[in-house]
Each structure stands twice: as C-alpha cells, then as structure tokens.
Image (cartoon, rainbow, N blue to C red; front, side, top):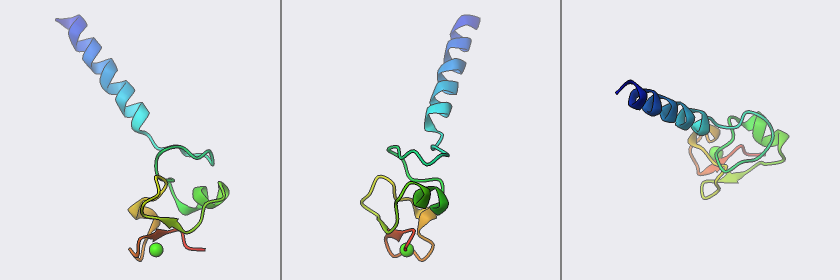
Length: 68
Ligand SMILES: [Ca+2]
C-alpha cells in the first residue's frame, strides 16, 4: 500500500517535471516562456499554428506571437 503510494507520487513528480517549459534559448516542442526567450532563439512573428506559439506571447491576440 505504501509502496503503491510512493510509485504514484514519483510518477506525478516526473510528469510535473516533464511539463515544465524550457527556460533557456533551446527550442523545444513547447511554446517559449516569453518573447525574450523566443528572440534569443531567433524566433519572431510566431504564427498560432507553430508549436512555439502561446497565447502569452500574443498580447494583442491576432494570432502572431512576438511580432518583430
Ligand atoms: Ca500578436
């Protein structure tokens, strides 16, 4: 019983860690943390269809993130 609880807890921890967005300039498969990170990685004008797009990158909500 205790072992099972530990197993579940560690699995949840791994998921939480895996869900954390990359902080650095290295592009991943998730939206950039912010436009500073996007620009540092060479990304601007990120379309909403991009895996790097996020609503937090598009303050005017026109479907383009981090306008140049
Ligand atoms: Ca925009």
